[in-house]
Length: 169
Image: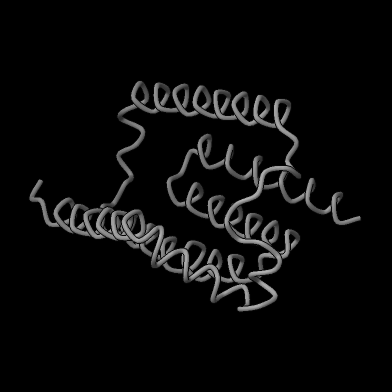
């Protein structure tokens, strides 16, 4: 039964992600992205990763999406109709990237048994220290550099949005 819910939520997440690409309005794309983020959070819950599900809802569906909606309102992105060619090209590139990603995931799924792929987090570590402690230990020790690079990129995105919003037309 869990597998059925997992497949349904995965399907809804993929459809919502496609609607992010093909929606005519930027605001509608943002709302479809919220649905996609919530479906990913439900998938995390079904995979017994409740902490990641909570972070998914708080960080992505909450904070990041509020930032995106704020940027849409600040930049007044209603001039989309003028650039039909660029929109079509970006949609074709997006669908092409989606197909490549799907083929890569299919290749990985066919070539490896997913039960044999294990990371550094084992059931024994989780039982001993707790899921949040184990994840935070790896996040702030082994994966500190990627974590800091991601925070710098997010800060650069915020600064870029402010610069774009303040630019005189």
